[in-house]
Length: 289
Image (cartoon, rainbow, N blue to C red; front, side, top):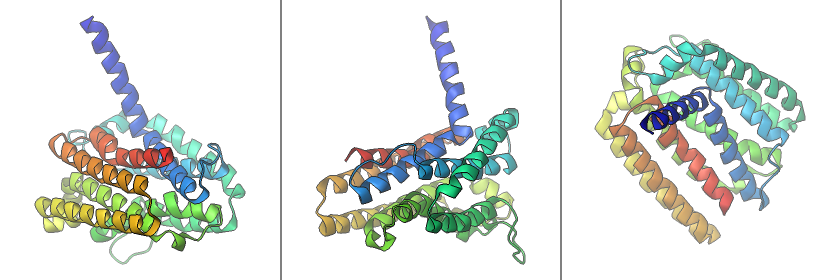
């Protein structure tokens, strides 16, 4: 019985690493947040296999697998890096799949969407690939204070702004929703910056945690959680939607718990499950409203 259980746990762990480290999980998080935005503006769930969804999935697969394939780290400190070194063909497969999806469904996008998509693609690739001619820095991630803002803004644009543009809705009509999305993603990005402190420091990248320290960064996360609550309260006063307010409270509590958990149990797998996973939780709950 013990041998069967160990075998089951091993296979489950193998599958989990595959889903997490090929960016399939990240694509799912992006998709669910996108659908949550569409439900907000449409009043109902959109078709699952739309051109927008397949385009966003493809874009996420491309951006993340490029990042995984060129990322430099150490097997000793990164279980993700260790996995990618042994299974690079899978990352190349999903990278190719992402390019195919983008190439096919980009032509089905409204003009405003693919124009915004081009801008987002430039910023996404410039994050990991030296394509912008800066004087001393060649990747956006090398500018520590800037990379977290760009990451949060790109996620907000992909999961909130693009769906609105796709359905010809003015994003300015939803300031509280976009503000809440930005705050949530900024908090998650801060947690990942804490995880990457040592690697960033060795690369000469001075992120907020490297500048202000771990303790102060966790204090900043708690402050931003309070700001998130204030935005949720403002949204409640504006729209009188108690279910959405309670959902936002559940989201920020779950996010703080997830960050606290990975602080005690740091690993790339846990960070993706319990930090990135907050996007999936938030989007899923919004879809259930």
